[in-house]
Length: 205
Image (cartoon, rainbow, N blue to C red; front, top):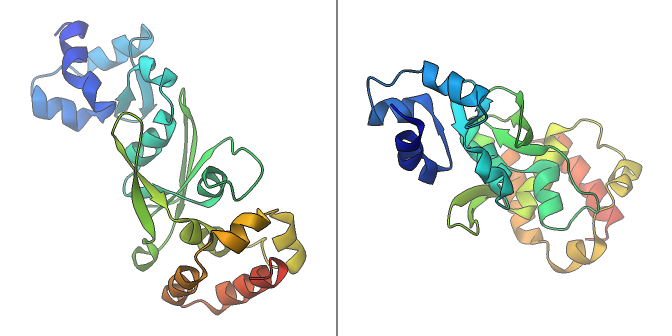
């Protein structure tokens, strides 16, 4: 198969895996992928997952990659808090939550970190539409905050909560505290409840 025929078929998918290629062309020679990667015509995202390098210029495409190369997963933690403007710093790596084992991948589109939660805690996300119409699974602000406190043991004291430097205007005016407390109950975690109480005290919620 020539590359142009392959690209015409697979390019609209954004990123893809080998199984999707084989569904289209069952006799496809996998060695083509290695050759095309070596020539810079494709980018390897992780084992058996690929994208076209042109997508590096597309806004938000790295977030789409985060959803696609390790599923099920949704963007959460620092990446989601930064997206909502809740923390001041820009996050270098994309952080997600998954029911799969904790993992980390690096490729030309960025660094992707996934933290594991039990299946009952895989909730609190919604679909956000990218500029090109593709959908992203993204934690709500409330779930991203709870995921952060739950999955990171070093956020414990009131000083730790201050050091998060959460945007006070957002916390006071935009955070849905009713949803926050509803989500908290689903964790059934006394430790998380104590952490959240400290955070709410610091930010006067």
